[in-house]
Length: 116
Ligand code: AMP
Image (cartoon, rainbow, N blue to C red; front, side, top):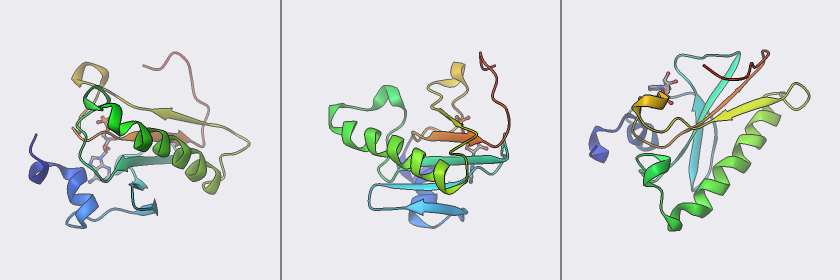
């Protein structure tokens, strides 16, 4: 997918509005438009990476970074005691609907296992 057609690249540029809860020079965290839990935040790298399967060795720093940002966001959202779940869907068969790598942070309700 071309970056100009990517909805999350448009969030990065500000062309699509999002409720941003954290951002820095490498990533943006914003609330999911269709939340699946009381807290549902997406963390995306500013750079367009289509999926985890497309991430290369050079992307390792940003991948580690978004995991740490997930914990920070979860703490800021008050999930420290109750816990939180992080999810990266990769490929249509796993439920990936937006082809710009994103980490879901979910919490605020009991999480079941295995996930559906
Ligand atoms: P996935 O199915 O793992 O690709 O997750 C994509 C997520 O992006 C879904 O949970 C959508 O609700 C969410 N989403 C799609 N467009 C937007 C948007 N403009 N702002 C916030 N969340 C979005």
